[in-house]
Length: 389
Image 1: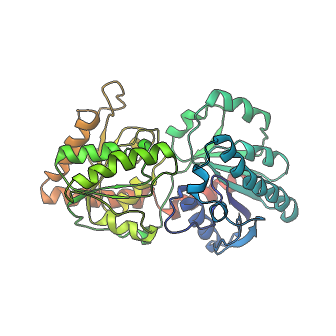
Image 2 (image 1 turned 45 degrees about the horizontal axis):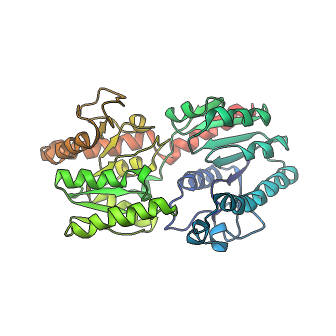
Image 3 (image 1 turned 180 degrees about the vertical axis):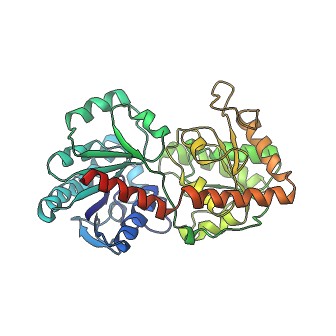
């Protein structure tokens, strides 16, 4: 099968730098590489300086952030200008995509994107079937569904990364839900864990960094934080003024380790007691959860987005309703919000050693069963074959 991949959501080299959080590339890269190992003819449309070991079709430019840094981009006060600058390089991808499809005659094109809009225009210009893995959430479903109808074609196939994600895209007919998967060799299992809690991810309000700190303070535990500051000014100011001040006053109980290389992240998971995941938005998947569980570390999370599909309540962590007004399940922890998260954390720390070690083994077993890269690739391979029959 001759397949072309591309990532639209951010114009970065493929694979992205080790210190850059780029969830969609953490899915598309192993997918492309494993498909190549299985004998498929795999191409990747990507910016210059990309090093992925498949056949590469380069765009006309270097990666966006090598031209304009994140700080420079978000120092521009006019958001419309920021969008235009990003779109100028995305347009280059779209043009190269049309050109490549007409020249190479691929069996299908697999696009990874946060929200397929402009990509649908590209798909309509060529005869090749397009598979879209959607990595984001649709914020304006009513408006966007009108636009999507304008450029709909029969040979567009949409894959969701969780069943919950589909709810925000009422205008899209999804072919299948395929959960993201990990290359387990990169996430070694730690049978014992450690004594600190962990928060990892972008340091943004929506990721729940403020709530994570509050939970740790009230539970009187220690917290390790790893992750990059958001480029958005409001988030940066919030984290700098509120969170980092608490880190300074914590007398070493809360430590911010900065942005670490992706290859170093598993060691943090492996030596943690639990990962706190108090998300404040409808996370469509959340790689943090499966990465943590792969290393044996249970997850304590609010019942938002895809969380109930990924964490097994009481078996690989605890799920907590975020408030009395937002009850999404009859979970083991009956308290809600911060109080519920604190109770879940204390329950993990209070477990007999045997029960806690079993919890860690459950975490690894669940990932081995449902969230491996090999399983993910097999499901995509099956989907491709069904499309091309």
